[in-house]
Image: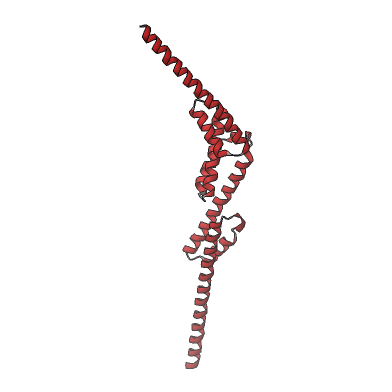
Length: 195
């Protein structure tokens, strides 16, 4: 019986030490996370906040900061890979309490950039759809409305490809009209000569 009590006491002491170590790790990770957060290293801050949570931190601010920094980092990463719709879903899922932290301006700027990119993607699709439908004048008008300054390099190349296609289609259409006009004039001359 005495041996069982000693074993049980030892197990309890080990558990208490491990919990204490976990809390120390959580506290240190939370402090480091805040430091990384304040310096703008959001990827490392998210990892540190995650470590704090994994080690038992129940601090709501740490959980909020983890959520904000992780989502900001992920949205920024997706934006950099031109995955604008995914980036938009992530950035829109950030809790509004981000406005209470120094990351506010970065989130607002990224959100604005993402929304511009999503709108540009829609405009490029409109040009593509009009080209596919043979509406070259409509495609040209839609292409002219797109501001090149808001485009990524890939989007600039896509737009230039559409503009080249529009120009070649317009030239082909103009050539067809000229041939029809010449054919009509030739037919008129032949009709006049027969009369």
